[in-house]
Amino acid sequence: MSRGEFNLIDAYFLKRGSERRDIVLGIGDDCALVQAPADHEIAVTTDTMVAGVHFDEKTPARAIGHKIAAVNLSDLAAMGAEPSWLSLAITLPQQDDEWLAEFAAGLHEICRYYQCSLIGGDTTRGPLSVTITAQGLIPKGRALLRSGAKAGDWIYVSDKLGDAGLALAAEQDQIGLDDRHYQAVLERLHYPRPQVALGLALRGIASAAIDISDGLLADLRHILKASQVGAKLTLDELPLSLALTESLTADAALTTALTAGDDYELCFTVPDERQGMLETALLHTAIKPVCIGRITAASEQVELWFEEKPWDTPEASGFDHFKDSNR
Ligand code: ADP
Ligand code: MG
Image (cartoon, rainbow, N blue to C red; front, side, top):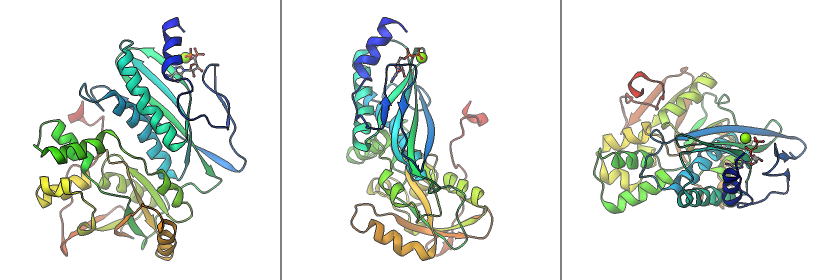
């Protein structure tokens, strides 16, 4: 490693977030050493963000630092894992101190808030991209999988959908938004808040869970496929922001909420007999998930209803990096 690389790691990534007591050895040696508590499993996930694909030159560096950590924590939340340790692989075109300070601030804010620590990484020169591998702790056998949904289970989403997609459309000049709405939805696109507390509360209650990164329909379909079940959704119940409903027609608002990505809310299923447990678990919290439908026995079939009439399933659902039109 060069002197410059050492200074960079030292200045921006060493001991800036929270330092957990289960870290035996942090940044600085060939590997980090961590101590997992007995009777726990470790959930491991990785996400990458590439300049020109996941963000552009208009995206603030602090948002990139926040979001690359947040999207990883969102995967941990979807499994019911408690975030613990992060590794960062960063590729930079040059050493831009102003950019790095902002990027690190966004990343360390997340670490402090969710009490997880950066324990290592790799720093290289090249086209800008950032990758985080996040690890989280789960008591043995209590992870929330995609495969546990059963016919009759209730389907929930953690909060409002479609705002990040609306912000992206505005960023790309596909629609015009009133400034008040634009600021609100841009905040949701740039600074998603992973539903970690909800994920933890759902252990032992939810039968299946997933985080919504590619759009509700696309991600719900992953649960349906893994569980070999179907779903019936009542779109009248979909939680939508004022920004969404005031900026788009009713149809476009629903389509956006169903298909746009980047919201990082959770979608989960709860057996009928555990609905009371869910209410009790969340009673004294600010977390108010919304029931939007029910799991059916019709394998991988999605039925949509709106105002008591069937509603056509929208075409576009989920972003695929390797689809011909995206290459
Ligand atoms: P090695 O050459 O042995 O792989 P490096 O020189 O790449 O080690 O890194 C030195 C130390 O700094 C290691 O502990 C590594 O985990 C850490 N590190 C490197 N880059 C980063 C980064 N971007 N964020 C956090 N830690 C990093
Ligand atoms: Mg290295």
